Length: 235
Image: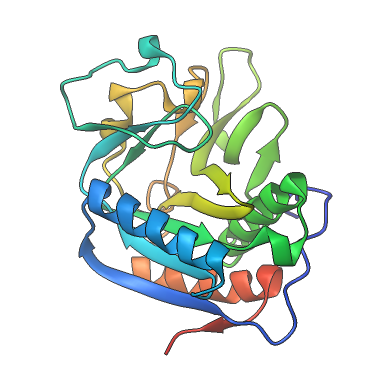
């Protein structure tokens, strides 16, 4: 069974639905970030509902608040954006599902650990829909899969990262979120040290031999989200 974070998910507000949107095409990063920050301000002010946006970006690197300059191996390869979220360098690009999660922890409980655990468990439960065992690792951000076909430099079974997590809170409203590799060009990750972790690889659902489409993943993400965080509104 997939290993999960032990903390329970934050309790969803009663009678509350999260706006669920799937954006078509490749969303430009700077404009999307500005729209997300505006939405977070509206949620904090009580003038807009919580939201989750599913999208893809064109190829780019993002730098979190803990990013180390040495981890940007090829700075000229793709545009580099300062993201403002926690974490280090990440890659976004076509074939990777990004979920921006804007939830009000004032209403769900001001517990960052529970919230991050719930995001991890959301990803892990989603991957389980495709018989993929995702796991979290203490001291290593994201969600990982064991590769029985390979061994690492320590002789143990290799572990590859399949999903990244990076969030920020403003007035206890979350933004940024998660990314899951469906079928991105994995060679694009070589321009950075992903999340500052050099001793492990990166994988995707298709790299694992699973013919999963973005639509397939979205269905699983939606079902798992409602189990972790409560009802959504897709109207």
